[in-house]
Image (tube, rainbow, N blue to C red; front, side, top):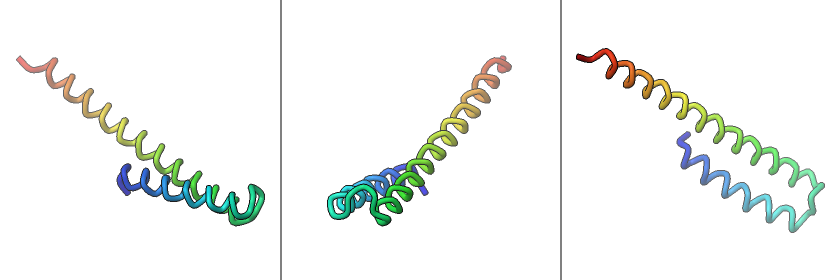
Length: 71
């Protein structure tokens, strides 16, 4: 899943959570489950960002090393 897709899913889940809290309060099972699903989406977003940053870092290092060895 692309980062932008995860961000959209997070916003949708956040809106759902807000609605559930208004209906049921903070301690209802539906609210807890939705909150856990939101947590999972946030975790997936952070994983994706970290992965992309590591790929970018590796790519940048390769480019730097290639430029150093070029005549």
